[in-house]
Amino acid sequence: MTEKITKKADFVDNEDGTVSDVTNQVMWVKNDTWIELGRLVTWHESQSYAKEMNEKKFAGYSNWRVPTASEAKFLFDEEHTNTDVEGGEVHLNPVFPSGCGFSTWTSETRGAKAAMGYDLRSAYEYWLAKENEGFPSAVRLVRQLKSESATVDGEPRFVNNGDGTVTDNETQLMWKESDSYLELDKWVSWQEAKNYILGLNQHQYAGFIDWRMPTRKEVQTIFDPGNPVTDKYGDTILLAPEFPPGAGQTCWTKTLHKTDKALVIRFQFYNGDFKWHQNGLRSHGVRAVRAIKK
Image (cartoon, rainbow, N blue to C red; front, side, top):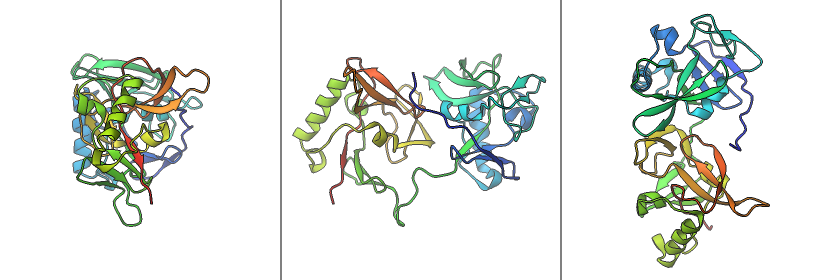
């Protein structure tokens, strides 16, 4: 079960065709594609629509995108009802206009063929073929209110050091630029991840011997919903732009379960959530980190 808790949204109409969710720090386009285009769209068309909205800088912004599966859940409002294009009931706050589609595409994908949709009638997640025009969806675009790569005291938050490492000036952490999946081209168990990092220290990678696994909170700091890239299989992952595409969808952490030591938290770069995972099972990879010593 996903451990991440979705906070109840607090919607504000910005009177410019956008709605802000100040609780979850995202901004939505007020109208979805059904209202704007009068039809449902395929997943590929949802990506093209986001590109068009960015090219014309809708409401003054050029970072609109298809929401993650986690963000789509922010839209579901159990306490309020609205009506979709067919007059059916959807659980969507009345700050959004009626007559919309009952579902939205998300950025969560399974390879080149399928993508996840989210149904506002019953908080239901489902998989659809990206190119299947018989079962398309609407899409409601989103953007972050706060940039994950904001500057820190006038300096860029993330800095590529040119030696295979990336420094985060906000958290004072140094990350290995590539994760184990990019380097080894295979999935690893938690113990294999530990051995991989041990090898980095033995070879003094980038001149350091204190590489380690990240905590869950640490690895979450390089998750960036505003920067979708693809892994090796064509699936979408959301990672700060200073890190290369092709990385694993998930990352082992050092966060062990308090009572069951066979369970470890695994962070998911495709939606920003995390789960307890059996440490003997092979997951995608691990990204080494170290604290910057002043």
